[in-house]
Image (cartoon, rainbow, N blue to C red; front, side, top):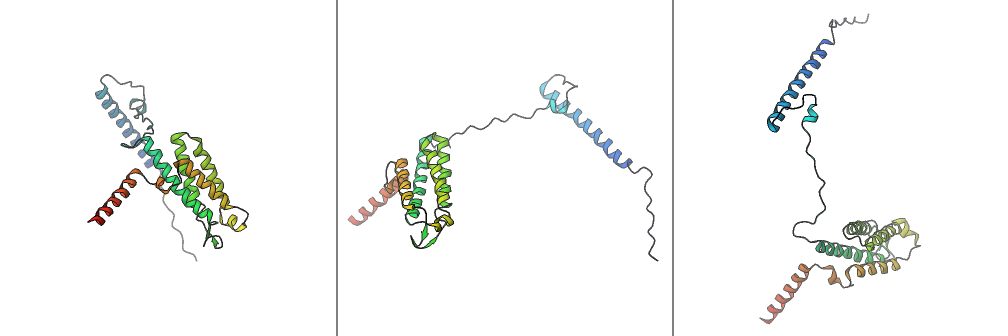
Length: 210
């Protein structure tokens, strides 16, 4: 015979403990509300409105949205110049990869991800960020161009052989010249980097004269 399951003896009023918890919680809530109203009265002076709720008595502080300002010590012009140099560097790298057909080794090698999404996504992001600062439509155009190049330089598209990446490399060079005013690699350097190079050159000349 299977063992007999003993009958469980349930309490006569099973919900009473739960009711006690609810009643106790209400009492503590009322006491807390009274304390909060007393504190508010001490701070503001006067009799608080007893008909208002606790949420009405103490209002959350209002937070104003932060304005978009430049970092301390950095002007907007310096920020834009920095953005242009970073875009120029990415465009130069993309130009080189496009000239090589986005393949390793160049032209005849295996398709690689060196063009998309590495440089194209970075160019698009930097261009849109700079457009937000300047409002210059050239950055919008550059972002759209980078998005187009991204679609054209996926591995399946490279393997298809239907794109002339040499023409795209020329466009990358043109954008770099438009942004920096020059195709010179020196245009990619910041003023401080130019100074460092000049100091090193001067030091080398002085050492040779000794």
